[in-house]
Length: 228
Image (cartoon, rainbow, N blue to C red; front, side):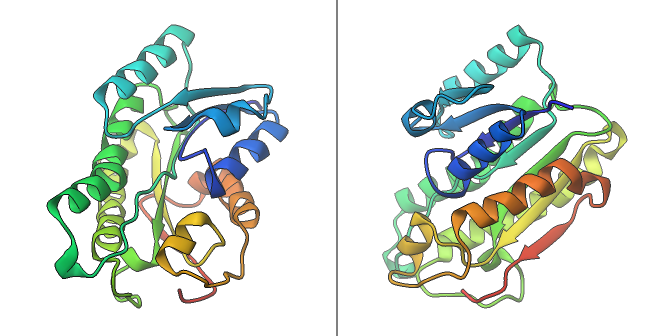
């Protein structure tokens, strides 16, 4: 059955690969990214792109109006976009903290709130991409105080939302990723070679978003075979 999937952070890396995989499977994809051109250039059937800024209220209004006008029900929201600053803690500015939290936490919360009226009851699935650095008790790395603490915040947020909306049959789960060969990994760990490609991880997330809600709700799954 054709499903409607909303994905953030689609201009590169895992998000870009997920758009292609969902389109190949025949699903409708709403691809959100500040830079919509990479996905638009693919000219894939069933893919709608938006230039979308998780820090801008007008972006959320635009998306809500589009879903209402098209009378769409959303089967899965994948909160994939992320912002990373790699600096020693004592060099982080207020602006650094604001930028990371506005995208990684406040943007996730606002987008989820925007989509709640459209998420399919008894089958909707919200998948938030976190990081092993946000998992309590996991190994931590210098320079990632803002990023990893923000990724920890969305883990707790998802657990809370799973409880709050369980009567609607909407599942909220988190995937805490380990090392994947992406541009963001290069920013965090320059020169490190990850054991998984963006395409490989995208394939896993695609399948989880389509089926994981049948088995999990309010859960954190650690998707990692290496540290970092």
